[in-house]
Length: 421
Image 1 (cartoon, rainbow, N blue to C red):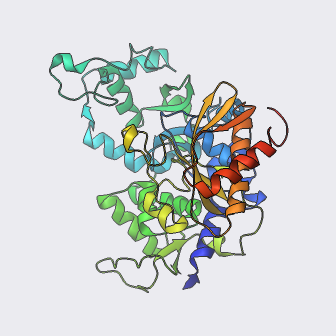
Image 2: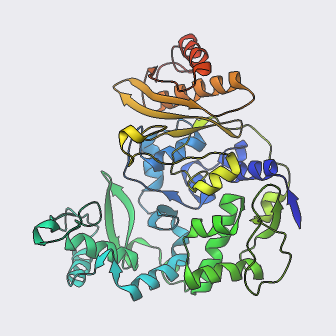
């Protein structure tokens, strides 16, 4: 049994996620994607879309167009599917999701009943693909006119959109690139290399392999963290447990001080003192190197699960984009600020022309307020430079003791560290 302090576990996690040490950031966007295993997608775009922010957070001010090409290029290097949520995934992981594709096929339901147009849509992709929902006649209709009582992002889908998304779920079609944020669908048999398409993976094998990927990506993780990453339930969660206990996932049990005790699984054997799992390679050698100072997307895999973010960083964070404005505490799209391996504050960002606007800045409690102010200044300026801004404006600082020093630091550095973008 390996014993880890909470601080040791945090540093291992930072290295695994690409925030500590230069070596963990090698290989550009594609290398980053393979290390983190899954990059969550989201429709919200503030400074940039979340998948761009995830790459920026680890790699610095890379070109946004270059990042897009690295995710969605021809030939395909990645595909979109369901992992922790809707995610960009390395294309070589395609066979591992066969268990989920089979489950969707058996269920034959996708928020709506699958319409009878599904076979017609598949044939259209076969004849005309690659295509977007625009080519299929549009993604949305007004279902309220037919008596539907719910409306919104999912409920007003057209039959064509429901059909094509179901075909994506079951693996008949695949999305390996986007154009103007619209998914481009093509037959899996055309877009996925034959060796991956023909590889047969059982349900248990797929879950075990994804558990291993989750463990390597997260560095140190509880069972709940692994389940959250892979989003498995029922018998698939049992496959995850079996893979951990049998060693098929290749992870080793560890005991992290200060982390909650693990719940004993009925009928389980072994050392019940373990409360987490780790990638054995991550336990070899002390994590060393320079820490990244950066803004983090709320959908970043470092902090995407609230219980884990609180356990590892003491960060209680909630996306407030869908919270009424008068009830928001930290702001519409508050981005935590990582510095020195810790969360030092939060920024609710916006952009007005060439001005980076920090609508609200908050600082976390900590022993080094001056260092936190410097880190906040650096994070704001680097992000501003990345999105092409030449000035930074702070509208509100929630802690009076930090406001004067932060404004003074920003005034003293009146342009990006490397000059205007």
